[in-house]
Length: 377
Image (cartoon, rainbow, N blue to C red):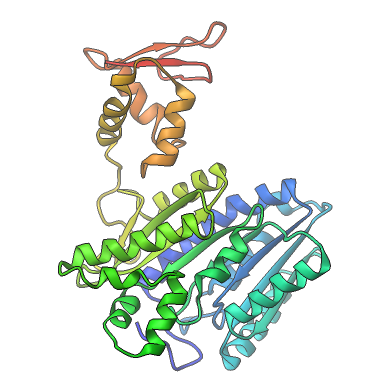
């Protein structure tokens, strides 16, 4: 998809899925942060006009609606939530401001909810905000940054790193794979400099030495993941790939956090978008269904992973198993582990696991409270 020349454009199926992931995650993230933090910040780095040609809501209205209609925010509290919507195109920024004004007539925000439309380039607006807070001596508020550009030119990794290096800050980034693939084949020095800034490294050039397209794709994706982990200091990085009608990767969503709870909630949001695998959506599917690989995960695959990982090491605690599933597999430790995977392994004939529940806990098959020890056979 090229950069839209019009103020509004059509909502595409993959964008609908992207918004589903965003909304599901914000439904969890906003109340968690507001419970423990006096001020939180939501940044939409490429906010757009706020609506599509068919009247569907864009990411700014989705984020604001998620907060204002959330049951956790029905009662007043000692908090402040700021929404910063950044848009480089003047006409779109003006249209967005109008849409927000109309939206807040429908759902008036309380005094502790504030929003700003900043017309300007993402890297400059965020750079100025980081500098402003640093000069004031204040701490940067816990932040969720949604970075959804058309392309790569104005998204230097150092700016994203400047946000997520702050305490309690996370990001969801649209890695525009097809744009980057085209750009990497060009010869202009300006384009190469932009890619250097995007990756904060010249190593993207090595990917284009790969003759095999899947190897080239993996090299670019793995480089960006590596940079988010090392340059930006993110402990957990997850991806979700959008496939086009030709069955080729269109772009990847990168989620980054240092909070294991954030990782857990984002995986649940991604599984909502792809109930079969939790990491893929294709434009070739029914856009209303939003399913690619079927309606159920392969719980047998998770069981085999657990056996392979823990059988050689002897007895293991349920907490270690939960951490492994959360951190090192695409599965959700909340939705997929206990009832869907461990219980069938326990009741199988012969049993695949031997379970020792702690004294005083309910000794019922399919329950695995903290302190449970499991031996994989």
